[in-house]
Length: 71
Image (tube, rainbow, N blue to C red; front, side):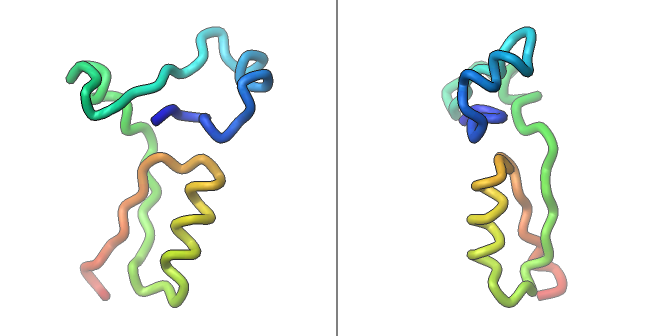
């Protein structure tokens, strides 16, 4: 995974002094502790939940929680 991976590399180079690096489950614990970034919470009661998840992923969301508590 890579934060801002949905943005073309040419644009990312102009946005960041140092581009975000790719991380995986095998990355060091120190990296993973901060790699989560912002998390989007969404109620799981949405009628088209799968469509909403795909839409947010296309927008660059890396971490999303689907709240099943009230479902």
